[in-house]
Amino acid sequence: MTSQSLSPEEIARRRRGRNWALILVLAAFASLFFAISIVKLARHPDLFTTSLDGPRGQ
Amino acid sequence: MSLSVTDTAAAGAEASAPAPVASRTDQTDIADWIALLKPRVMSLVVFTGLIGLLIAPGHINPVIGLTAVLCIAVGAGACGAINMWYDRDIDALMRRTRNRPIPAGRMPPGAALGFGITLAAASVLLMFVAVGTAAASVLSLSILFYVFVYTMWLKRRTPQNIVIGGAAGAFPAVIGWAAVTGSVSMVPLVLFAIVFFWTPPHFWSLSLYASEDYARAGVPMLPVVAGGRETRRQIMLYTVVLAGVSLLPWVMGFAGPVYLGVTSILDVGFLVSAWRVLRDRQDGTGRSLTNDAPARAAFRFSLAYLFLVFSALAVDRLAR
Image 1 (cartoon, rainbow over the protein chains, first blue to last red):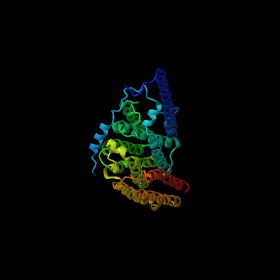
Image 2: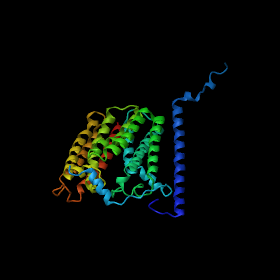
Image 3: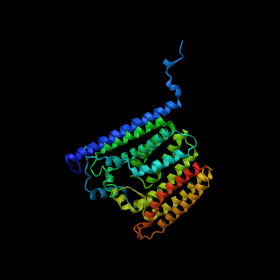
Image 4: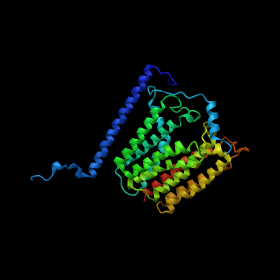
C-alpha cells in the first residue's frame, strides 16, 4: 500500500528513470575501478611482469 | 528537566495519524533515493573531508584522492539512509521531516535500510581497497558511531545527543588526512575538535526554533528538556570554547597569519551571534519573543563559519 496512486504510465516513467540512474552508476563505478587499477599498476610496474615473462633464453 | 521523553513521545503519537507505509519501490522516484542520502549534510561532510585531504602533508594521486572523497560522501549518505530508516516513526511526527520518503509512504523502510547498509559496506570496502587501511578504519568507525552511538543510542535518550553524537560529523577531516598520510596525528584531531565544538551551537540554534517539532516527536533536544534559557547559555559556552579551539592550528604552528586573521574575525562574529541569542527577548519560560530571529541568524552564521574556517586553513596551507 502506498500513499499515492500513480498511473501505469507514471510508474513506467519512474522505473525507466531508476534504470537509467542504475546504468549510469554502474558505468561510473566500472570506470572508477578501471582508473584505480591503472593507478595501482603504475605504482607497481612489476605487476605487469608475470612469472611466465621471466628470464628468457633459459 | 520537567519534560519526560516518554511522555512527549506518547503525546505526539496520539496527536498524529499513523504514517502510510509503502510496501514496494515501484512508485519510488530517483529523487527519493537521493533524499535518503541527506545531500545537504553530505555536502558539508565532503567539504571537511576534502580540506583534510588537501592540507595533509604528502602526495596523493588525484584518482585515489577523488575515490577517498567519494567514499566519504557515500559513507555519509549511507548514514543518512540508515538514520531515516531508524527514525521513520519520529520523522512522521515532525513538520520538518514528515515529507521524507519513508514517513510520506513513498518508500518501504526495508528498502532504505538495505540501501544504507549496501552503501556503507561498499564505501568502506572501496576505501580499503583503493586508498588504505587507516582511512577505511576511520570511515567505518564514523559510520558505526553515527548509526549505533548517535542514532540508536543517544538521540532519543539524552539532551547531550548532539554533543557526543557530533563526533560522527567531525570524522571526515580525519579520514581525508588519513587517506593521504596513512595515519592520524595531532593536526587532524584539532580539526576534529573544531567540528566537534562547532556542532552544539550549530544544532542548538536550530533546535531553539524547532523545539516544538522535537517535543512532538519526543526527541530530548536541550530546549525541550532544559528550556530555551539554558540552551542559550550553553550555546554561548560552547561558542567561547570553539573560539579557543579554532585558534589551535595557528598556536601549533600548522597554520599562518591568513588562517589567524580570518578565523579571529569569524570567531568574533560567532561570539556576537551567540551573545545575541543569549540576550534574545524572552518570556518567563525562556520562549523567544522575537520568533527566535537571533537563533536563526546564528544557525546561518554557523554554516558560513565552518565553511570559511576550513577554507582559510586550506588557503593558508596551500599558499605556503
